[in-house]
Image (cartoon, rainbow, N blue to C red):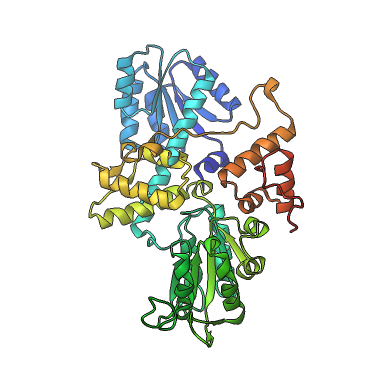
Length: 474
């Protein structure tokens, strides 16, 4: 569960410790109006008794100057007995020295009187989110002892649950599958999961990155060649279709397949026969083809840079892999998995990721997706001088990133905008997030492509020259 979701499932509960009964009652009423439950006690001894009774509180707010045990000593006791429980210290005698003493005693934050109830509310929200994040990191650390291998899919987000569901439903179906998603999002892992769960699992899993092989060699790579078929063909060579016989052939970056080679791939898919370069006869093959791309193949079909008949042959079932920024707390689960792998490989045992570093990982948008996260964690493991990854171990762009938000509904009534403007802003943000991929944008918005094109035209968000005279029919 996402930590933000968790915070909304039940009302937060706060223990307020203050020997001023009027102040306590005022704060309790103020927090109640803002959606937080609070219980007031008049001394540190009463507070410890409530905590010892296993009362479930999300945070403690304590005055410093009280009869008997003061707020600083109370913070120390709570830090010893319940280190996950955040404490906010409040005093009317604020000074830098008192603040330093409070933090050293284990307090999460420090406020001075007089304070606005909104200020306390904001501090409590941050403290409770921090507590939830610490608990999530601890849980993931414990699960990390049996971390998944690096070639397996990881994540519990709703977006990934949909991927798992599709994989399980089509794994045994003898149909072609097209995996779409941004570069670095893990499309090959989905293809491997399909192969592992299929009846072809005992056969080979053969991969080809269509963008990594020169066009002149790609036909030979796929279909093989006979001796003397071309100048450097000193011997016969089996192509990848033959090598994958009885198993799965994964064609990554299929959008980069040259247009001239697409009819031959189409025939191989339709007839299950291939003709090696220089051969007079065809060879039967039994191969399931899974293709992947980060490009918008429908748009390429419209632009006549990808064959429509091949597109429909490859795209019997589509699995759209979400970008990492759309996967919530999966970022932490993946980071913990990669940390286990990297620390084992470097023989550098680490306990996990500090909550402050985890917050930065969650805030960063990960334009390079899972691949960038792997790089980030490997770097952090290599650089850290501690038994946990800290904020200082993260790359500067992750460490210093400031989250950007789009304000749809402003706080001030005079800044409210028409519904069309709200729709335009959101559509613009979605297109930015999917880097202009119209297939992914339509999926996010729940629209068909015809409606998406109409909206893009309406709000002037289509680049010049890309505006179709007749939007594609679905």
